[in-house]
Image 1 (tube, rainbow, N blue to C red):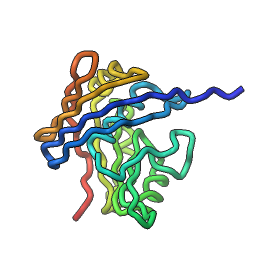
Image 2 (cartoon, one colour):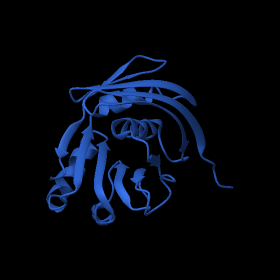
Image 3 (cartoon, rainbow, N blue to C red):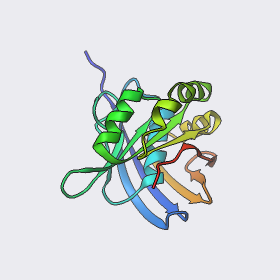
Image 4 (cartoon, helix red, strand yellow):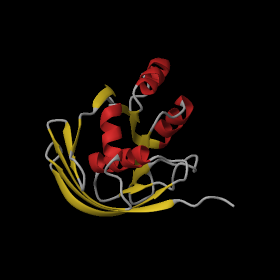
Length: 182
């Protein structure tokens, strides 16, 4: 018998002073049985950093050929493809060909650094790719905020994120390993 996904509900308030975006979002996230609370919260953080009207979650970790998050225009064309983790370089190239913009949020400490060392040169020529690394201590602290029903407030100011929920607030400082050109 296959294990079922666990459903999480999040009321997310976003105050992104860097982008001038302010909004409230009622989100439903499905956590695949193989997904950790840390990865789930990084997906939620990626949503907060890119929040806008048409941004939505993909079908999940078990679905190949689909982003963790994406934004499509009214014709269905993919404007923004967002992935979380350490994907295969070929998958990133494929996403880069399908979407106007690709954003990858890596995490995992030393594993992420090794992944970047191995893939940096191959990914350098993808002009529409941004790679953002999140420190292991910060993403592990985010995982402590994961609850089946969450109320979170994310404030973004001067490149820093402040995430407040039921537990201790968490500060996250994303590090850009690569920025899209243009």
